[in-house]
Image (tube, rainbow, N blue to C red):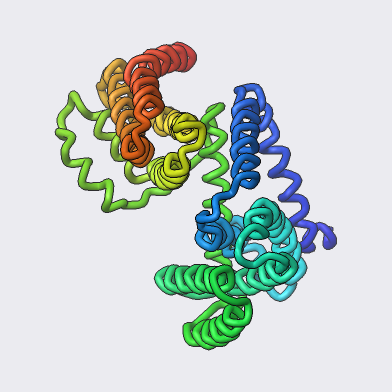
Length: 417
């Protein structure tokens, strides 16, 4: 019995239980056709990448590309501890024995983040070798490893800080310094970058010593674990209902101003509800990030003129397809809410509200993502791919998608009856 309470064995048991928990959702995801979609994205991306490195333009922004693709993967330092709120009662008294527990979590998380960084670095290496620093690939690898280790140490220290504002400020500073080091190294000289690294590490070490910090940040680690599970549940909810998913509400000022445009009346109850859900939960945040990332990619593809503009149109439609799939999880947000059975609101009104929000979000996302692609192609005198892509997407978002959504909701209504 005493052996069962060893913290490291608890972590192993929880990891095994979590794998058993998500295995059915993985099977449902496999049956949905999503792996086939990922395979298509991989094939198209591989073709585009091969064409890029085989015919790299002399004016290609090697340094800027390196900053954009390497900074996120070198700074990203996730940590899955599998801690639960009840652990502040049962495990906190044994905090002095949590060293092995934390070490195992750090090693498993580090393997993931280092693997992602290695893949991105390998993909960037052919571009780097054709740049201004030929023959310095070994130095780039060593520098990436050093920056990854420094960022991992900084991320752990940020988790120990008491206030969220401090964690946010230090995280931004760490990302900016990493981007500056990478930019200096790729644009000028590794010796200048080395000096900047020494100064940055010394400054950050001093700054990290200033605020008060916890030795073992229980609440922060538990919150981070809950956020990770929530994001995974949100992802799996696109393929199958995940009743245990809880939404994290966050006010987004750049979207909140849209909510008062919906009249707060009985006939628009569900429209108001789902619009607020879209703006304030993680669904809206994910959609905004998809639009930003997709806009950057399609703008770059359109500027390069791949395939006479059809490459940019294809990238536009692929990102928009991911956007639509993510938006589809909105209809499950309040499926298990009890108050719908309490208040005298017709189910048809519920369906119309969801479809209205979904339609406007689909059309808005389609237009916003098209702008960097369409305007760039029009300026180059390439109109047909831009017009064809927009026409096809608007036809899908305005007609075919609403009809499919209605059929699915009616089927779910019959199942719940």
